[in-house]
Length: 372
Ligand code: G3I
Image (tube, rainbow, N blue to C red):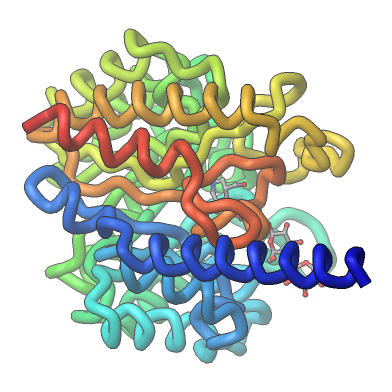
């Protein structure tokens, strides 16, 4: 009997704690309001969220974000899987979700080496396509996709991840086939992509987007060279996206500031486009999902108080730098909404697996209060 009473009390106490927790969540300040004088705040939204299959995640996004990027559904493989077939449904739903909830929609991404179907780079015998064929396919894709969303998508990640960490251009099929091994043609695929995106929607902003710009000065210099090249040709480029897939110990304040100031010095807008902080302390540091191992993403220490404290400190450091340079930064987008659906596993975002704000959330809010 005594046991049953104690049990009931325990259940009651848990329910009250849960209710109080929920109530305090709805009283949270909204990130987009807290940072409204500095930059837009957004997140990558996945298909489940925009389709209504993850309503708790949708509530977080609606409350905190005033800009959003589709995590996957505008990538070539998903939106244009076969030569004559475009799959508009999920990406249209993303754009409608943004319109309904007053979020500025960003298009991601037009030209990338990953998540692009094999046929794009091949001829009918499975050999490499010619330069002219690949350029024609790129033009068709960009014209059709950017044209479809003309006037509805604010800006496009036109070219994604074209650089190696040492600042040279990545040896992708885009470079190999269109560049034809000639230094004079190395930037051609980037130049054509930006030209055709501009033709398809003259009012859309156009961005170059990459990871490790915040950790590798050489890679950042490579991005600066791309911007300067495009500007020297009179081609429109509005911004550079620093993805900012960070870790508990990187980037340093110095290399992050190097990236922001050097990119801004070229006259373009700087954006943080894919912010998260991996809690795994070992292994691969880049943003290529094929390099992320399942064991690595399990991360048994992610929820530990010590890890969460380090996470909060790193987020606070990063946001302090972003606020210091807020005149150059127009947007800060998290790569996801809450930990359970992050591409990287572990505990990299501001909301935990139960949709609750973490210590890192409050640390980020505090940086804005301290900046006033
Ligand atoms: O849609 C299929 C599903 O049908 C299938 O059952 C399932 C089985 O694995 O795979 C699903 O596709 C996955 C897709 O995400 C949607 O969930 C792919 O395998 C998976 O590779 C893909 O990962 C995405 C990754 O880009 C691909 O490179 C991540 O969600 C996405 O967060 C990540 O985002 C990239 C940015 O676009 C560019 N910068 C780096 C960033 C992190 O890698």
